[in-house]
Image (cartoon, rainbow, N blue to C red; front, top):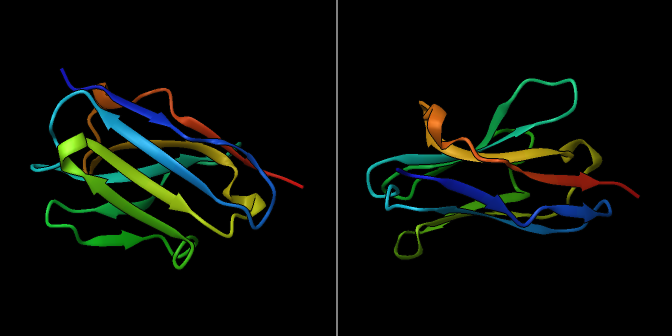
Amino acid sequence: QVQLVESGGGLVQPGGSLRLSCAASGSIYSVNSMAWFRQAPGKTRESVAVITTSGITRYADSVKGRFTISRDNAKNTVFLQMNSLKPEDTAVYYCNTFPIAVQEYWGQGTQVTVSS
């Protein structure tokens, strides 16, 4: 069974950078689009970045120009490079398939806190 494990979060100051990783226990990126999601306190979960099986990327307006999603199929890993971080980026970040997330794939997520 596929398992997704997010890592790379932490506490950073505004303007800082983080690189998140989403490691899969099985090879799924060749057959599924993947997305990074985030959920901030008191907010619903939202997708912020998507990468298709062909490598096309899309971003939420709130992160365009600052975040970059990429993947390494050989390593079964999806990345999210986050630059110019803002306090409003504070959230727990998750990865999953897109557009339909697989319930069993949800991992622990990784906490990103942007604060001065």
